[in-house]
Image 1: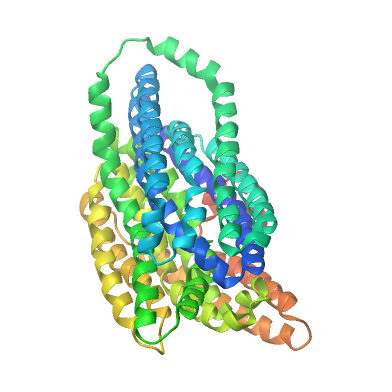
Image 2: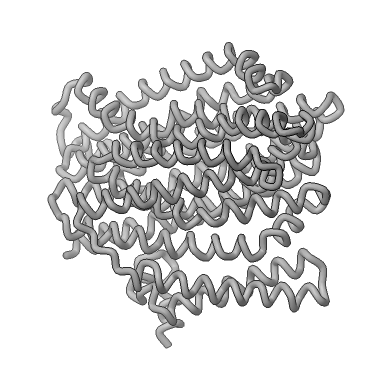
Length: 534
């Protein structure tokens, strides 16, 4: 029982820590995109966003699946006291990640002119090539993060994420401003180089924490002995067996986002839009609405990352009751995050866009409509993240890949059809993404129930959060209407968000969507628990 309590606390605390770091990273990201859009305009964001999906795709290929594989393999070995074997997994993984990073960096540098020409944006070649150093450094940084996550230590990942983003934002904005005199393509390249600068400083941060942790690691290795259990070839085989399906799954949506750059702009041109108009519409979708809708994802991604080692540890010990308990807990937390964010962004879509992009008045209406379409899918995306973490933890990492691929096929069809309707235009891509998440969510849920035996308590997992979110949405909308009669948009929007947060927190306790004892598992929440208990 003590071990179970400890594992549960590790999951919740780790998710909370990564969630806070993720929020800070996204806040910094918003403060990057907003001034960047105001500096280089929606057209300049078209250049930036042409390069960015390919960068994310290549980064996903080189550094998405292996950190999760490292985390899981290290958690498995540590659960049975094989500390030296866990360290060997890290050493082998480091070499693999370094090789992948080098390969993707060289590939993108060489093929950048061809890639941007295919996308009908040859001037975006500068923005794509400035991401090459990041493609080399990020996989190495991810290896260190996976090492710590396998030990259920989320602080190094959280700290390095924040450091990485601080330097990305600062250096990216500075270079975009300096290079604007040379034209928007060069300014977009300066913004893109921020990713490389951030990767360098993020790697330095996590490497510093690795060095500080080394004495503990040496002591554990001394305790378990230095006798290898598995040959290097076997470690590589197991790493790839776990990582390849995860990488394929993680690559599906970046691939589709890149395909969007081909489908959306070409379809818009085919139905009568000019190149500039099509680029501007795509900039409103991907450069203005997309960054905001990505904000809540960090919380559910934190749940996924924290779930994997905890579920792996319990599954390795054949403790299926604990697997089911944490699976249900992860799905409920996904609803508690995804539903209010979905409702809030639908209700306040236009005020939010007005708040962030006040200098882009001509683009606000369409960007707000895109934001609303994206927001409908937020809950389903949150559930996809949580369910994926469970399936990866129990060794079924191929299932989320298959399910997301099926959703991706749906997205391509919906995007192509709806974007070709002039009244819908780029909103069709946002609707297509939402459809993909709905399909993947349902299929993942069926798989988790089949392989873990998890029972779905609708009242606790969905009805309570849904009622709380609905009341919050009414409160936020009413607060905005009242405040906007006397104040400007900024004050009204922030006031409405604050009112919505307060109402939602109260409602989740009224509906018992959060249990009092769960607050004690989160650092610093003991006082809040006592307050609500009174």
